[in-house]
Amino acid sequence: MTDNKDIAAFLAESNKIEGYPCRVKDYIDNDKKIRPPTLRYNLVDDSLRAWKQMEVTVYYLEIYGFKAANITLIHSEQMFNHSDLKGKDKGNFRTCPVFVGQQEAPKHIEIPELIEEYCRLFNEGTAHPLKLHYFFEFIHPFVDGNGRVGRLLYAMDILRRGEKLKLFLDNYIREGACRGDIRDHPDNTFDQKRYRYYRAIKDFKEEYLFGAKHEEWWEEF
Image (cartoon, one colour):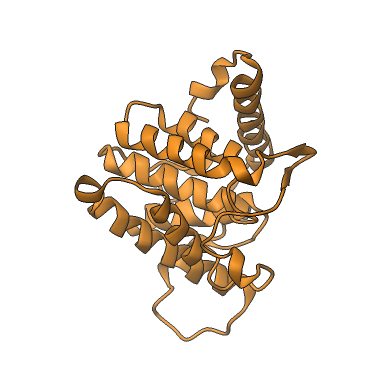
């Protein structure tokens, strides 16, 4: 059983990577009071909905295996209150081009085959969790929400292996780091670590497309 504080820290950080200033305590206090439907609280609700859907998926993995439908269900929950995303783009793979930075992601007609390969690797369970995560981010199967969904899938991969849940940018992993607003953590090197994270995804794309070698993939951040 993963501690609620670990879940809260993981989800808060995942939203922060995307530039959303959610606080760890927002997730811990989620059911304790009635709150206005603000962006921050909608993000909290969506992340918790997606986490619960992910836990259901983990529970049934041994029976049904991991499929594309599991990914789209998690996405529909993660983007439930996202007002800037059209309804048809919630819980469905994209049918249009998207760009990651200045680079175009794989064409939408390639997504079904790439996701099938991702699911195959996930079910085999032999690929390094981070490398598998980079592969998902390389595919970029949705119009929006790829990062948050991809990190939830990473968490699912970690938990189904029986490992302890870790933050991506683990400068917050220490006693008491789950209290307060993670933006104000005294050991904050968030921007540098986020840069390394995005660079690792870029390196994976170069390896996948051009065969370049980057040992950084296998590092825990």
